[in-house]
Image 1 (cartoon, rainbow, N blue to C red):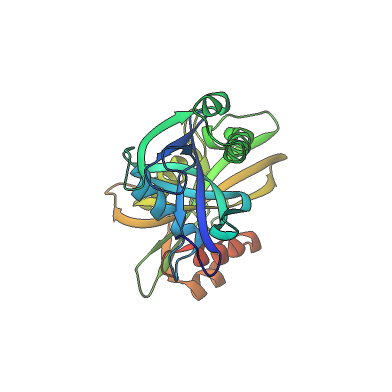
Image 2 (image 1 turned 45 degrees about the vertical axis):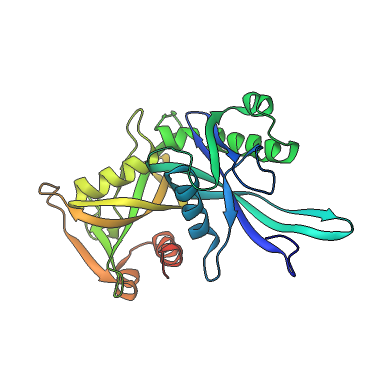
Length: 281
């Protein structure tokens, strides 16, 4: 939008996979022909997270889980004293959960790069700083995503699963070791397994639910049998069912009932957070 009457809100993404970030070659103005991070404008009535998901799918063909915010900044271009462009942009760290990489509607080309390679592509100084910051954030949390174990911390992942588009229900299960407690499906991250994949696997094995990851949620930490446990949770939409699963008691409940049944305050806070991230909420 040239010569706007007000600032335009946009989103960008540092999409990280295998230690590299995704960049795109702009197909349109502003900055046509330049390499930068993928992103675009937020549409009226659209949340920042939903806009990021949509832009990544349209521009790169990838389905992403939107994670931590990397940076918020404004970009102002002037021409003969007038404001030609004024964007306020929110960049998020994103993880690939599906799709097929391709140059979409606003991109001429796409490429996976590290920080040095991005500089060689001519990525501008600001975008390069955001890209490197996103890579550093992803590297810092990589043990949780890959399932690497340490002697001090037990790493797990879990799923807050919902179904239904109108009257939504949430899945809770009886805890294996303490069956008097209701919890969300969770379990150990296997070597080489991403945390999001663990969450999906645990929902399938514990409750026979097949789903897709919508967004990462907050992590929970607690001590069990003298060891620190760190659990990464993900919001998951149920899409179908599996024939075989553990013979564990489970329940699909409306939000208020599920919240009342959950045995721990941390789990109730997770449910509150999940309810705000469901598309269309």
